[in-house]
Length: 178
Image: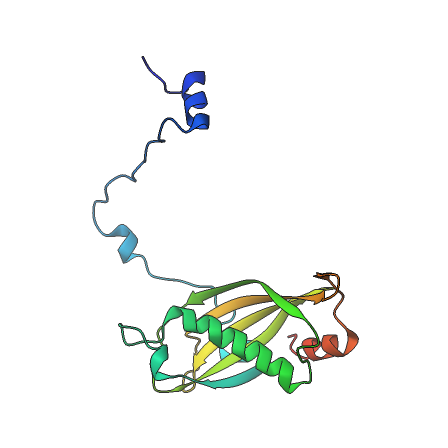
């Protein structure tokens, strides 16, 4: 009895009584995947792509067993740089904001010891949210080691709902637009 494409198979799958088969990709005839060169879009990989920089120090415990800064630390660099810039420009914790999304594309490793320069640019300034483009550079390098995106949503703390970005905050954020 064949079950492929049958209503019985669909019913069994819905009930969880049959495991869906795992499909493996065809065997490679070489190293096609590994031999492809890594490419990234050029935007965001050079210092001139950013309007502001925040310098941060690396720490010994930022390193992983491969002797470079661990990937998760790049997210800390992004968070620290954005919030340091806001705090330095009098946008404090009274302006409640949450990270709605973040991403990071790793381009090359950074190692301890050394400082990093985190470039900031606002790519989208909405009614209640702001999207930052972020570049992470070794302090002595002109090309980014990583580039990322970071979205803050400003909220009304009492209502726990998105709220319009206040005028004084919008002015600070607008200064990062390029």
